[in-house]
Image: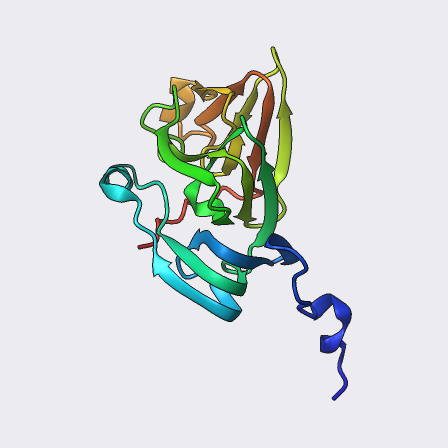
Length: 224
């Protein structure tokens, strides 16, 4: 049988080392030798001896999810084999977190991650009661995390004395060490007259980076 479908860029080669790699722009392959963690329902194929089980986040984690609406339902993948993950054909990106790093991520953008990473829902300092920016998921430890994004993300460096302002519905994540607060860019008079649609943003200050997606769509509700 002949087809462009069988070209090398579409072929799933056997993994040569454990852990995650990009299969293509829309999916991640994870060679499992023990355990890894992923968004529930994100597995699209696997081979080998793997078991997929609900991952408990403990009573504290469940309460935080119920109160904040942040976070996502996770599953633990255990055994030996290869699994492929994707979410709604969104673009996939792998971030390697080193010891001492901390990455704040919106739960809707998490696809899968190494078990050596720790995950906690935290309050975004200074963000107040805003729809997309009050609670986020903070990853620490060491290892890789795969993120998904609608469209091609923009990574904006943040430098001292040069803050960056982002829409809370567009932000994917940022360096945890950045200082966050709310910024109002619209006057009260403008709001009365109908508004600009850009009333409040998340202000990030310090040294680091922020990741935004090219969309201001309403955030998805957590699964599970």
